[in-house]
Length: 113
Image (cartoon, rainbow, N blue to C red; front, side, top):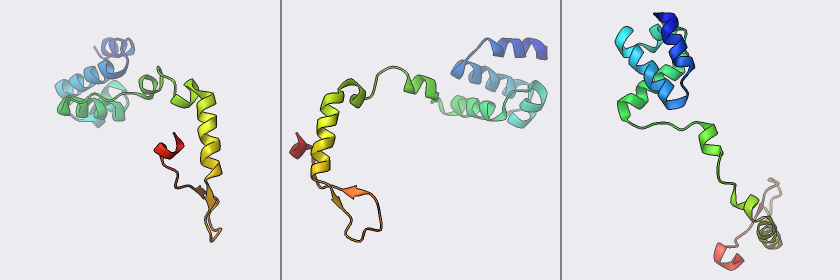
């Protein structure tokens, strides 16, 4: 039975996998992620996340789904981004104590536009 469950989980990804792991955790291990890790060999943190998702109803997104898709604004409009950077650098000033290498600017978005 354990091998069948491991095979089933290996075919799933993301939230679907965590949901299944949480179900098995509740059914066979009394909701203990640590026991689930010992019995099935699944990562305890994944099982815990699945239990939290099941309890709250909020599904967490992985980095793959968050970072894939739309490009950043700077990547879509590199010429405009470079122009804005040059405008901001023209208004930038160094901290008077020189204890920090970061330059500051009081330029607002409306002024830059």
